[in-house]
Image (spheres, rainbow, N blue to C red):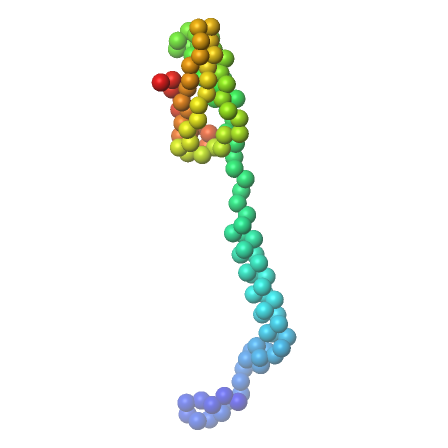
Length: 118
């Protein structure tokens, strides 16, 4: 029985009786553990990094060198470069007269790049 402000007693709702039972407390504890376990799992799972297709970058530099400078080059870029906005890496172009280095800057996380030879 629960006392009311008027002093009359009323019967406790059935829900309060369930919450006080041992089964309900154990169920609540199990649900709490499951929820916290899921939250921890979600925090610890980061997606693997996306790797930039540097072979495409190599072909683009080779094509640009041929069409803009009329020089046939063989370009080599590092592999395993993460696809990440602002990341800078270097590629090397080998041609008949020597080598030159290209600075490649990733413009976004979708794989768009800008390259230039200093």
